[in-house]
Length: 350
Image (tube, rainbow, N blue to C red):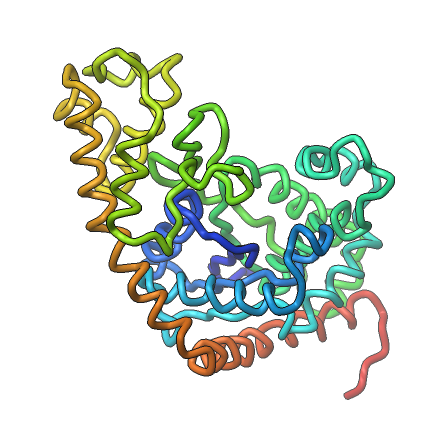
């Protein structure tokens, strides 16, 4: 069965969107609008898999959902041409996740490294949702029969699980799929990863060996998308470096994580390669490079912060975007669910 080429991706509304979210995901979302049919989801159901102390409670979740939506729009995503919505408005995500729960295997989920990292040593007290959320992620993608998913390196394992689930569903229900019109026995595609850009994994400004994170105790470890120009420039100038000048070639960045991170950020924001950046700044001191990087960050990010502030001041407008997007998403999802139920053997209202 031929599949319509479609991109799906989601961002959790967990607050404090930062440069890592922007360069690792959102900037690529914007670029893909020109070449792909895109669905961008604020995955609020994923956000509640850990305790209230982590996701902040109902009021915080609603605020963060609107903030992520504002970040999408402020960064250049067009909700008229593409679909922008929040996950919980489309019930098919949960419905398909249950079907996939009965296709996936415990051993597959047990190997997910992110569960091990987030649950820590006290796994017995972790929520079932935290253990099972890779299955919901598979449902998110396959509910729209997406063929491509932009993911960071840390999500590749989950996308591989999505492919495994799609393959097993197709194998388990092949005869039923064929009886419902697909002669090749394929209903779900095996989605491919899209990993692009020189800074898909942005590291902390205080420790180049750790990923930039909202949970870091130091606000100076990250550039938040809501930071104003002065704050952005100050954080760049305070970013950790080493005493050596910048190298002239990429090989010289090896074993220098902070230098590699800052060069990667410059490359990504300027849409250049690391090699090109080093040809310009190699051999120079960090002080002059940081000044140039601070100016670049302010030029690129300060307008986004200003537009986000304007958008979130009108929650009714944000909600109207999400409502319209969810209507469009639901139309695609309902077709997938109807056919999935027929394939599995569920009797549904006609």
